[in-house]
Length: 611
Ligand code: ADP
Ligand code: ZN
Image (tube, helix red, strand yellow):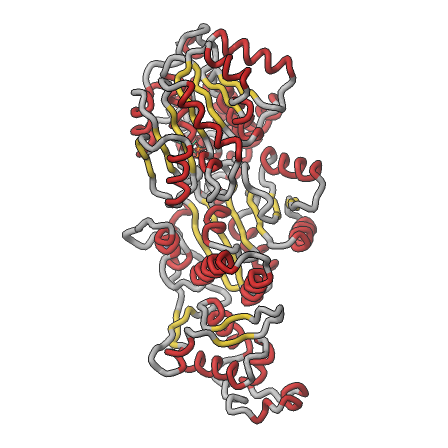
């Protein structure tokens, strides 16, 4: 065993994929698609792999890289991610290195020498570096096992992260026709997928498409009602000491929210494009390397953050589309443990996003697409049924049963017959000339004798004072829902005045009814279910001690805590309480190299807390 772990130059590290999985990564079984992809690639086939974030894409090329002779070349767009991956592999005892612009000339030479000596299993490279004539010439002299093209959607102009350098990657096939290629992405949509296949010359490659469901993420949407307090309660209730991201739409809101959380004693940091590059780097660094940091950020933050233990993503403002929402929430729970996608939204969000959209300089066609996307986002918020079914359905995937892990499944929202009040609200908009905002309309419905109403003569309208069945809050909620569901539109001139849309007609004519979800301030907490992972109920002291041990080992080497062991591994330790190295070797995430390096330290901690 010993010399297999630290092999001689030129020796492959392990024999077959299963063995590599166990001895290097410490896992017992492949996830459904992984095994198939790996088998296909090891046999020399090309592959196009689509898996959601956290699905386990890396192993699809890392395992073949270990069992096939030669060096695997991994193309990756982000230097930070590259370093992370290499560091994690080195921790697991794998011979990996990277080549990119952040290395000194000496470092580059050292890596090149290893490459020429055939002592690297994996080489991570930035695309522009790979296509440099010097690198290509070097690769001509090496035995290559495969090319892995990570974040392959970067080749697509339709996708959200186009990188021109990726276009040149089709050269690889021409220059190295015998080397198998595997392209991987978490971007699901059909058009991007076709573009990847075409531009990388992978039309013939076998496609592996996994479900895009993220079953460990719980989706929750609540009506906004003092967002900060709601956030605070959410954190106190569910996420003490956890790492998470809070998204806000504007820089100002990011700064204010971060400062406020800090004042409340939370470990929160701001992140947006208005901060200096140095500040952003420091904050990002702290987020990934410290335990339990809350990043309050605009959407400028997120891309390339590979932190596995982000326990929640909270939206204080509405994303522009379900695509954006799914991508942002997907940053939670990459480690497969329980995670939360939590959002509050209110009618101001709707008004603001609609206005931003109308005012934007985009072409009419583009605006129409964006308007539809926003509408889909709003409909999701007001949904009565399972959110996961709806989300997956939107991305073209069918989920047979309601998920049991979203707010609507756990606590089916009460609904109410809203036809009559909705008609009153809509005709009030009409009678007042479609020129007023929610506050004034509510006053009219409630029959308030304000100065403004009298001077406008609105106290003489037929809708004046007809809205006795709801209070002001109830009417505001109803207007929000009518707006979200597209019965009302916001004025494009910039004011939040409401007007009717075509969709109103069947409702006003009495041809159609309307059932809406009822906003309830304090919905009951979710029923038990997935709390089994939750540490609070188990043994907080042992948990803290395990994390402290991990932290110490990480600090000593200057690496991230999760490079030592993921939270999932620590949780399994709590559960199974191994008492010997043999028992420890059976825990998920404990490969041979880590067993040898860290096993004793963790066994000591466990022994100190023996029950
Ligand atoms: P992706 O690149 O698709 O976002 P990763 O490759 O980073 O996902 O894997 C996500 C997480 O799942 C990692 O923590 C990884 O260690 C874990 N993982 C991957 N494959 C397995 C497996 N077969 N068994 C257990 N854990 C796995
Ligand atoms: Zn559900």
